Image 1 (cartoon, rainbow, N blue to C red):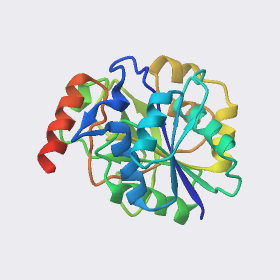
Image 2: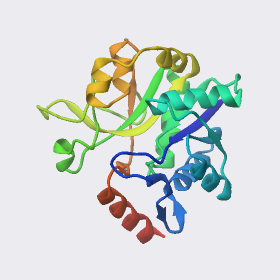
Image 3: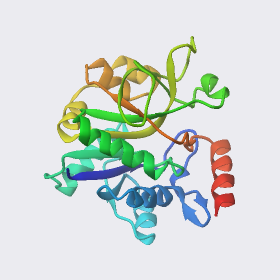
Length: 244
């Protein structure tokens, strides 16, 4: 199956402005994510952005990037514009990898991809076991609640995604910033209006659930922290610089 990986990115993040170009080991966060996506070796990779500075950075580091509109409300709308601009009509699966996940495990990207092919699901994502109790309370950490407990060899249906938890019983996991869509599902998703639930919670995946698009979740081996705040950036920088 022909797959395209797109990484939506922009400089105007509210909590940490300029975050894609913050450097770790001399390389920007966005270029670290691009390199991870290439190493997964499941298809061609492009960064989709509204900022010329991000395009220049990705190109200078040997990557590919495409300029998109600055009017998009969500990353998914951005990647859909990129697909149309690139003219990739033979694509069957589209992987949307968030540009602030430099610690994403390559094996987890491949697991999601192979399960999408095997099960022919409409839309898939990853959840990781919560090992840090603070994650339950932290509203920067998105949680996914699934029907059954997760496993790396199969998908479970997502019942809900939330930032706030009233109750911590049930199958609750740390939701990772990655999605894989059938191209037709992606087309359908971007044609729908933002749902009330989505705008209230600032979680675009709720638009899918609110419109009866099933989201399947597989277990990720790693629970990487995304870069949302200065504190996240410092923690990730420490991990990555120590590893190198």
